[in-house]
Length: 67
Image 1 (cartoon, one colour):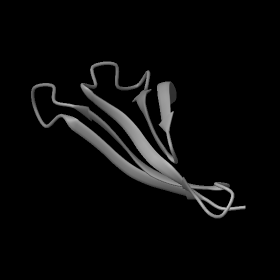
Image 2 (image 1 turned 60 degrees about the horizontal axis):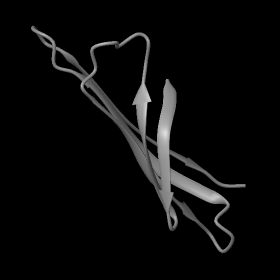
Image 3 (image 1 turned 180 degrees about the vertical axis):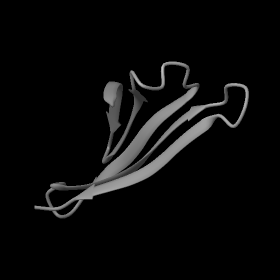
């Protein structure tokens, strides 16, 4: 996955996520927030979907990190 065009506002962030294995994806977002007393923890979600004819594909996931 490639993350680009990110924007941080306060402790929240959003960006576009793409993947060369899903070039026709139409919904490509990643969002999350920084947590903890010093903002050194992070959590968020991502979505990649390709509604091409047939069953299509959707990838939904979450992530988190803590020192």
